[in-house]
Length: 242
Image (tube, helix red, strand yellow):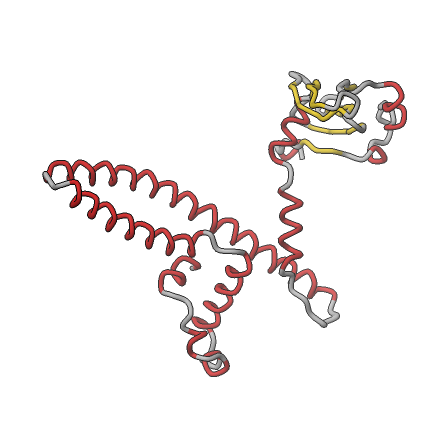
């Protein structure tokens, strides 16, 4: 990874560290106190064993144990949270960990099942599933950014709306009435937007498949499915999914 310009940090099992002069986890439990660490370097990589409640082994090609940070851990002996010295590798790892686990969870939630026994079919189905998950994540992140931009725009519009109310010289009752009407419109718009950009993975897959069938099938799909189901997708949903 380092030769290709990629920086990596992560945990590693000790049976992968062949020939590395590093104490085993059993030795670390006897010799090291909680919060201490030992590191081994070569030209490009660093391997560190850190004693938490158990020994943790980490490896990285772009960062090391220093400058060390501080982390909070619960101490059964003291019956309270205590501060421990923590390698920089652990801090960097905790910032971005969990992506692989979430990805694996999503691939299993709605995985494609089949009875075909061709060896390549499972690979094809897996890649298709992966593409759908990545498209869903990209879709949500894109619409979230649009929503944040709209929030800023709405703030300026609210300020302008209040300035126009004050300049109009309306009574308090009339101003309150105008605010209620405006808030109802905003809530209705917010509800419609929420359906679009907070879409679940299952609904995203369903709408994507329906859209492809509606746009690229030979019209047999409309004969198999009731018309009320075919027309369930609004024009906005179609454009958003596309």
